[in-house]
Image 1 (tube, rainbow, N blue to C red):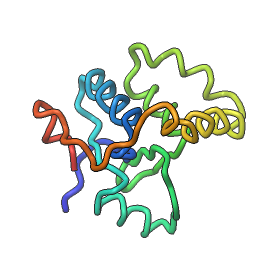
Image 2 (image 1 turned 90 degrees about the vertical axis):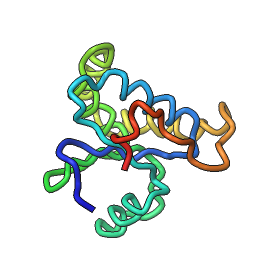
Image 3 (image 1 turned 180 degrees about the vertical axis):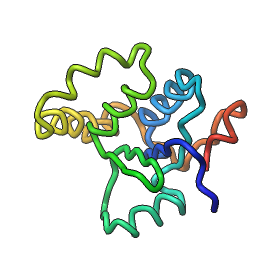
Length: 133
């Protein structure tokens, strides 16, 4: 598979909260620099295997051939890329990673208490289908 130019956001396709965040990212990504793949996809499986990452269930942001970010670092990098309302997150990136990841993990551990997981990954919005890998 030829990788797109830009960034790839890996997200939990079974999580309603994650899917809602993906829809917001799509709406604010005016430069179309973000592409998306669920953590359940073959691309994510290959990505995780190559990096020897096991049992990862957090958001990952990957710029192919450059770098990748996980958990709160991925959130802050996305905020830097998109600006707009996400600018409110920028100051928090200066906090220690153990604190910001603890906040991220707090939400991640409770997401299925707040929402019911999907049985399968929902189809992407038709207007954005070319942005899903």
